[in-house]
Image (cartoon, rainbow, N blue to C red; front, side, top):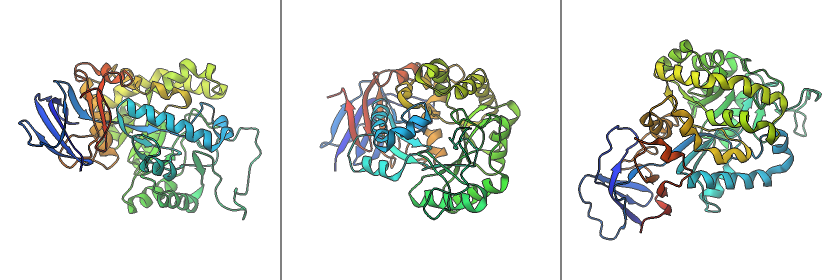
Amino acid sequence: MTRTLFTNARLFDGHSADFPAGMQVLVEGERVSAVSTTAIDAPDARVIDCAGRTLMPGLIDAHIHAFFSNVSFQKVEQFGEAYRTAHAVRMLGHALRCGFTTVRDIGGGNWSLYQAMADGLFAGPRFLYAGKVLSMTGGHGDMRPLSERPRYEGVCACGSGPNFNALCVIADGVDEVLKAVREELRQGAHCIKIMGSGGVASPTDPIWMNQYREDEIRAIVNECAERRSYVAAHCHPASAVRRCVEFGVRCIEHGTLMDADTAAFVAERGAYVIPTLIIIEQLVEQGRAMGFPPESQAKVESIWGQAIEGLRHMKAAGVKVGFGTDLLGNLYSRQCREFTLRSEVFTPLEILRQATSVNAEMMQLEGQIGCVAPGAFADLIVVDGDPLADISLLAADGAKLAAVMRNGELVSSSSP
């Protein structure tokens, strides 16, 4: 069994505001086995002297789409599965180099991509996936243009069953959504995501539109509970956020147009929100040049001015806020800028928790990832400096990381 001993480290454990110095952490195999203020006797271990740097849990990005290889969904479909997979390999490798040792693919990721990483075909973060997102007809996951004629039969040869694309499955009514949920869970989905409101990338639904009926959402929530899983919901407007949380959804993706009353309701119910500022900013700045469809460009520009205000409402209400990015196509390289954008509202300690322990708790993996503690997976990074004082150290695309360890394996290190 491989053993690695980190010495002389300032330690952020994923929770505490205290950053004790002179800490030692022993890794045995894929797990942390000991955390100590005094010397650990491990004569056969590889020693990494942190030299006063910060040792902390690997970062967690709870909102990615590994297969979304272009800002235009039509091109994502046209370029095919091989192209999408090549993009995913590039994107996930970049995330790992930036210190993201876990990602949650919240739309499109699948068992095949997970297994390729598990078998060592390429290096990437710990990979959790929701499978295909569930969308109602005409909802955010229905990417057919307005001009396309309706399809009253499914795509399978027997003429029944839901339509689907690379990222979503279209399912209407309790029976269809239950079958879709069971199918995704059968294929190893860690959770289920639904489209709870209108969105930016879809061509025909307005942002303000609430999606799925109460009976459909509650049926999905109950089915996931039976599998000890949970439901995440794409929601921009406050009305969609409130009804989804009321119906049992655990995690809201985006929550961009959050108001104070809704934030208080979300906090009271103990639900989580994963804001994704960076994708909105980047599409506003670069969408037109990158070929983002005009109807989608207009929608993203309409919500950008309210995104920061939504964060302020979440902070004031004490909402459990996680960390996500939602980047599409070549914008994946801007992943770390999310730290900078959040610093306008949150303190460095709050952001560190969002990207570690809060995300782990939301994903039902508390004590396994997002922390430095005996028994946790050895997903660790060594930061060249103090991110509690300077969050920009994590916004440097990995340049300020002296070491990255994923599942006990040292992925990169500048230490001897």
